[in-house]
Image (cartoon, rainbow, N blue to C red):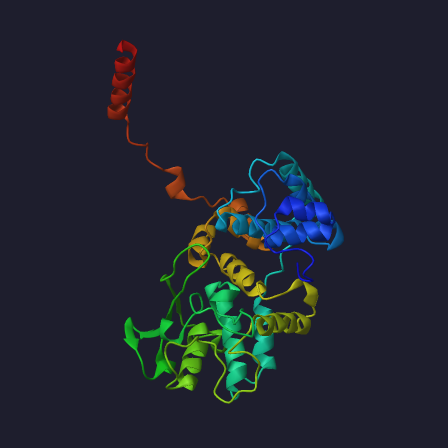
Length: 360
């Protein structure tokens, strides 16, 4: 098509017959809608992506769903439905080259490392990077919610946190000046993976670890920004900065995670941007928060999804509980739980409904 040897509107079967190669199959699928019965092209694409390009199951599945979207947008049926050979191949690929192991969660020590490594107290751009890591950790954010992930280092304004989305409180009253006195911070989230946005999350100030306190660091960042436009993303570079992109990029946060791992003597290949979200969830669970509370706070749709994130720390949930068990300590409220309310009325209604059905 690019060389002008085949017309762009040539139907798929004719094009495949002219140049029956894997490359042509992939071009056909990407450029033109395909008939639902053309399962051979789908299988060839899967084999090419997995065997030639070395992609894992999750990457191949994403590309196949792109093909599905392309066909449906052109008014064609879903080419992936009712394809037994394709489904069988994808199941086999999942067993052979299933989802890649997730990145390891960041730790408190990895937060302390950039705190000491960056000049965040004097350099505004370093403060932006450090604040981005702390915010991702404490609020368990996905990268698009605070990073410049789009091409050219641009922000997705539908998802990213803006300056106007951060509010500070002192004894329950919102304040706009003297932010260093704030004892609480509230962040309003944008459009997310599982919701349309508008959800609010809060954190209280920590008087002990002030350099790691998200309330203090965000207050310092907002004060440094001064009269910047409120509609701009929170983590945009300062005026006159020579940093690439509009603000803190995905690559910048990944670099900080790997730098923290390096300073802590860990394998840097096991850490990336998502380590901050995983680390925040793991740290708050180990601090005593329940799985359900972390699930709601971190906006996981399913508890099973959260378990994949905090797998490395689940084995530590009962740390220290052995001493309580061996000492004979028991939860009285659990032992003395009252009998449930009798369900005589509901049972009577059920029996009456069954009797009515028998009579009919």
